[in-house]
Every structure is written in structure tokens, then in C-alpha cells.
Image 1 (cartoon, helix red, strand yellow):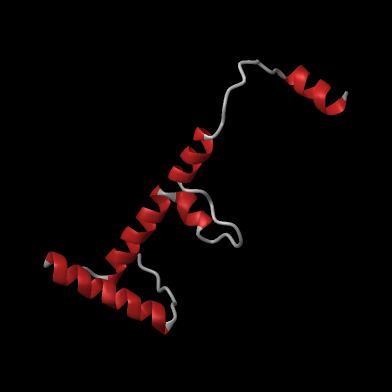
Image 2 (cartoon, helix red, strand yellow; image 1 turned 45 degrees about the vertical axis):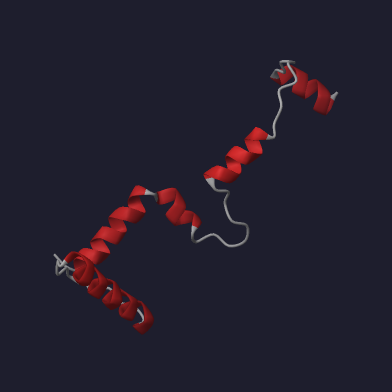
Length: 91
């Protein structure tokens, strides 16, 4: 069963360009429905990144930025448990 999807002219044009590029670079003719299905599969496979693309404001950190942050952390050699944290925070 197929369902119609409404989109603006700019999106439709971008989809047509993508369809033409696939034909040009692979020699394979694909339908716009196949392209949309593949795009949905791709977005579902990386849901976190896809969902984050809709967030406003601050961008999420890249893996490289997270690694750089973690590299800057040092271990003091002192183990801290929940009771220690509670004592420090709440007295």
C-alpha cells in the first residue's frame, strides 16, 4: 500500500536532483519512493543524530569533542561514594 506524501517545491526539487545524481553516478534508475524509503531507514538507524537535528539551540558534541573533554579530566586517586557526595553537598 502506498501513501502520498506532501512536500514543498524546494524539497521536491531536491529529491529530483538526488534521483538524477543516483542515476548518473550508479547507472541505476530509482524511484522517489525508493529514495524516501532508504532515507527513512538511514534516519532510523541513527535515530539519536536524526532527532538531535531537530533541536534548537546548542549543538550536541561530536565524538572528537567528547574525547577531548575526557582527555582533560584527571583522576585524583581518591575514591568518592554517594555518602561522601551527600556530606559535601548537604553537610
